Amino acid sequence: MTGELAPSPVLGLDSSKVQIEQTSNPRTRPPSESLIFGQSFSDHMLVVPWSSQTGWDTPKIQPYAPLTLDPSSVIFHYAPSLFEGMKAYKDKDGKCRLFRPDMNMRRMNTSADRLALPTFDGGELTQLIRKLVSIDSTWVPNEPGHSMYIRPTLIGTQAALGVNQTSDALLFVITSPVGPYYKTGFKPVSLSADPSQVRAWPGGVGQYKLGANYAPGIKPQMQAATKGYHQNLWLFGDEAWLTEVGTMNLFVVVKGQDGVTELVTPPLNGMILPGVTRDSILSLARGHASGSAPIAGLPKQLRVVEREMNMAEVMAHSDRGSLLEMFGAGTAAVVSPVERVGYKGRDIMIPTGEGGAGNVAKAMLGEIDAIQRGERASHPWSVLVD
Ligand SMILES: *Cc1c(COP(=O)(O)O)cnc(C)c1O
Image (tube, rainbow, N blue to C red; front, side, top):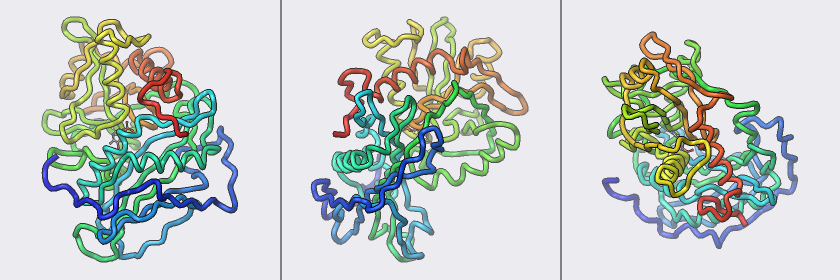
């Protein structure tokens, strides 16, 4: 990162000061089988106001309720807004676990700094999230594949129409019980790769999880849908470099000239969101490739590379029969296999393997899910809530 850091707050975020107001009318969690992603929310939320004068205010865990904001608040006009997406999982002993929360905290601070919003001690926010999850632990479903989605959000709230660094901000965290992404096996997706649609560009903000990055993607997604595709494969530039898929990172598996299976993802070149799932897949695949932590289901010989790949290379692999897999990667689904890419009037078909996913996608989902649910004894990525 370059440029100046946002000024450090006067008072730091302090989880030990948290005030807790329990709800007086607890709701019942919807039945696990009826959960729709992001539609129902748990009983409590975390709220921490910030002002440039006093820094981070007393954190409060309080009943889930609407916010009240002045219509002139900068959030409504200039979109100083950023968020995170993480999950709490129940292990077989019924204990709640987070997955690599330090990564989300680091990324959230990177986003805050980019928007000149206040930064904070990520360890303190993790403590507050642990408290929030433990208070609403009955909202974490324990059926296989279920979890509780956690949405930390930071917005600028100064009540004034000026494009300046905001004098006020609000950090809040809401949580939502979610069902399995795949109820009955994998559902491979089709992608529209339209070079005229651009999600991110060099020097832009694609690498930050800003609210402002998402609304502009909705219309292209709808246009893809009218052409019969589920999602967009975001390309960049005249060479049609692959960047991301929908709101997920992209992985491609090909057979190299030397016959070795290669797992490829675009490098963090400023246009790519540094996904926790992306990093986890790279790390696990490298552990496998080096022989230090073999994973069942992966080819014995595996080359793991962060490098640029363009549509010409994808088509060449397709023609040669060496295009083995393509999948998206993100917290919601872990992996999302791709079966078809529409590009310049041609449909490129991608093998999806038995059950709708290829070997690499399947092995990665299996391993990450096992770590998230605490099935890999004392794995450092799995953090007990209490
Ligand atoms: C959140 C997100 C991802 C995935 O990040 P994870 O930390 O793995 O959930 C990838 N791309 C975009 C654009 C995202 O917003």
